[in-house]
Amino acid sequence: MSKPHEPPESAITEPLRAALERRAAGLDSHSLRRLRVARGQAIAAASARPDAWRQASLWAGAGSVALVLLGAALLYFRQANHELPGLDADSLEIIASEDELELYENLDFYDWLQHHGDDPA
Amino acid sequence: MAQAIDQQRINRFLAEVERRAVVIAELAVGQREDALDLVQESMLRFVKHYAAKPETQWRPLFHRVLQNRIRDHYRRQRVRRRWLGWLPGGGDDTDGDPIQQAADPVTRDPETLAAQEQDGGRLLAALEKLPARQQQAFLLRQWEGLSVRDTATAMGCSEGSVKTHLSRALKHLRGSLDT
Image 1 (cartoon, each protein chain N blue to C red):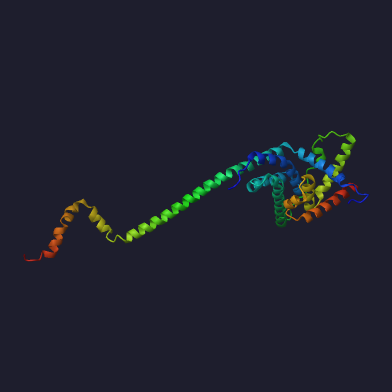
Image 2 (image 1 turned 180 degrees about the horizontal axis):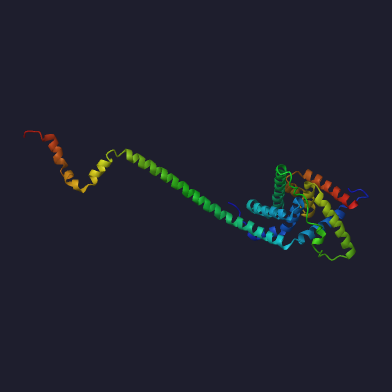
C-alpha cells in the first residue's frame, strides 16, 4: 500500500521494535524491584481473597443469627412480663421473705377465718 | 464455583508482560514513577478480576486493564489541571534519549547497528509525540503483537478504529524518518 517513495512498513516497525526492546531491557534496578513487589502483592491479594471472603461471610452470618436471637428473646421476655401480673415488687418481697413462711403455711386458715370468722358457731 | 487461581502461571505471565507494560505506560504518561504505579494497579486489578479466565485471554485483558488505568490517569490529570491551572501538565518527558539507556545485545555489524539505533531513536521520539490513541494502538499491535481484535478489546474501541489509529500512526512515523 505504500507509495514508491515511502519507506516500507518494516523500515519503521523493525527499528522501533528494537528501540522499544532496548528500553524495556534497560529498566533500572529500582523499577525492577518495584515490579517484583507489585507482582508479589497482586498474587498475595488474589490468594488471600477467598479466605477473607469466607471469614467476612462467616462473621456476617453469625451477626445475623445473633440479631435474630436477640430480637426473639426481647419479644419473648416482653410478652412474658405482660402475662405475669402478680410479679410486682411487693409480691416478690413477700415471696422471698423467709420470715413470712409461717403466714403462707397458714393461708388456708386465714382464708377460712375471713369467711367464717364472724360466724357465731 | 470459581476456578482455582494458578499462582505460578500468573506470576510467569506478569513477569513476561511487566517490562513492556512499564514502557507502554511510560510512553503514555511521560513519567517512570507514574508508569510503575499504573502497572502495579493493573496487576492487582487483573489478578482480582481476570485471573480465573482462560490463559489465552490474559494478554488482551491485562492490556485492557492497563489502558483503563492510563485513561484514568489522563482524566485525573485533566481535573488537576482544571483546578490548578498554574501546575505544568504531566505529559513532558524527562527521561532523555532512550538509546543511551542500554547496550544492544544483538550482534550485528556496527554500521547497521548505528543506523538502526539512529532510526530507532528518531522513531521512538516520534512515537512519544503521537496522539495517545495512535501511540497505544501502534504499541499494542506492532510491539505487543496483539491481533486487531485483541487491540480493539484492550483499547475499548472498534476494530475499524484500531486500523484507523494504526494507519495514522504509521503515517506520522514515516514522516519522522523523512525529516
